[in-house]
Image (cartoon, rainbow, N blue to C red; front, side, top):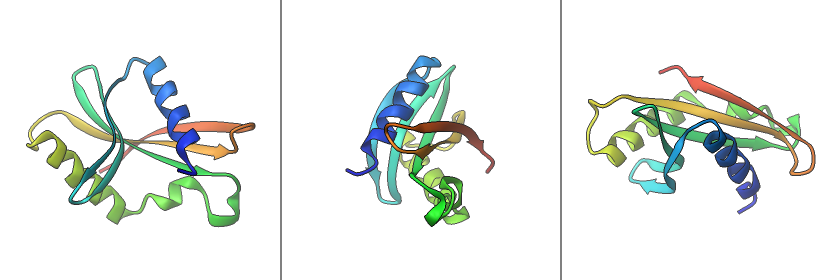
Length: 109
């Protein structure tokens, strides 16, 4: 898995901030959830995107409205319901394993 290091980095970052891991690379009929977490009683679906350069666009550009819709459907599938506190977040990793920076966003839905 080429971007595995970025997911590892994102997971460590979130755990340090009090998130609790519920699942990783969880497959649903709507797609895969990179990180399924919980923080302060809220379920959080986290999309991790990494780009080593801007040649293929910024990491955020890869999170399209269609992707957000699939993440929402995946979250409801994992939870088995849609009436619980939930949000979508993204951890964007710019760079390489040796030189990188993180950007953490709450996705508006």
